[in-house]
Amino acid sequence: MCFRNTGDLVFRDEFGRVFYIGRTDSIIKRLGVRFNLESLQQKIQKILNSTSSNVKCIWHEETRKLVCFVQTISNADATELMHIRRRLIQNLLEIDRPDDIVFISSFPLNSHGKIDSQTLMKKIANKSFTSSADPKGIFHTFITETLGVDLMRKNASEASIENMPGLNMSFNAAGGTSFQALSLVSQIGAILEHQCDQNELLAMLLSSQHSLETIMNFLAACSVSKLQVISKTLPVNSSSYVKKRFKFLWSTSLNKCVDSAPCIVGDKWVCVGSHSHILKTLDTQLGAPMAVLELPDRIECKVEIVSNMNTSYIAVVGCYDQHVYAFNFTNGHIYWRIDLGGLIKAKPLSCATGLVVATYGEQFNVVCISLKTKNYIWRKKNWNERNLCQPCRYELKGGDYLYT
Image (cartoon, rainbow, N blue to C red; front, side):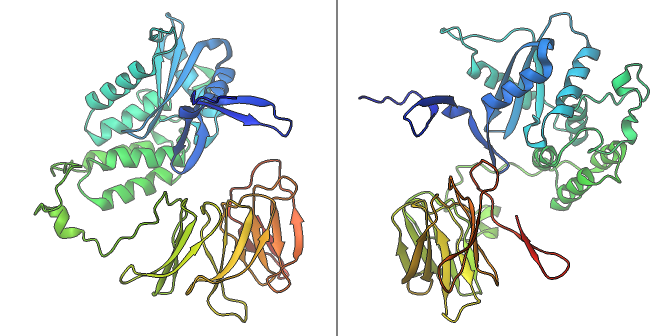
């Protein structure tokens, strides 16, 4: 049997049946969250129902923007378009809400009769290039075009926005999310002169105490940076301002992609693993390898240091081979390993009871292991999804703990 890389993403069940999920290029990562653009398009299509004939979501990598193109009837007026924006904001989850909504009368097609994504990409690039470099203008455009808030009038005749307080509402009350706040600060921050202005802007966007009018007045008062943009191809021997401010202390290679966050141990060591199956303990001052550990499969899990055992310098890490490993982080010696029945991406949680680990296991995906006996203390099946999240401990009244 011959397999070709068609770019399709599929799922194969235990009976060998293959199910289509979507295109590989439709899977994106936005502000640390991975999701499927095709699934988002289906959600939006369902929300709009008969209002729109077609929807296309585009991820523009250069501007880090999620743009939703919505095809509408040719005679739709401004009020109808504003209603569509508000409907999407009210019905989409926070992470699903696009950074920009663009209405289009018809979609461009390629030679195969499919929607031409490249032409839509150019539209996004041209709009970003021609958009105002004024912070207040960028914010005003986002509020009116993406959130669908009419800032020019405070009393509208339409029922859905009848009581909308206009400029007196907060960013959150207008439908803005924390993800959109971060995106706005990233865009506006590029032309603000001071880092403190960016921090203050983010705080105002996330606060319910600051109105849109207060934010716009703040942006109007901010001076636009006059600094020249430094080229990404800056030569190493340049005598630029960047070279004077930044200096590499050391670097090391783990041969492949590093998806796990480094674990800092005191002020002496840093532990980090990679897709090359290699985990290194490095000297924080020199970057020299103190210990090297090679596992059977890739490592995306962050190392957890265990301090409540008699053995010194012990740490644990999860692996794609479905095992959790206990090892000495100063010399790389493996003490033991346990098969948990599912690949492990999330950092384990060490506590007085034992070691809590979230896995991709089918039967159990959250388990607690005794660090002394290596046996299960308890095992749970949380939801029917793969468990990507790191266990977290909360202290309750009476001294009990809740792990989520």
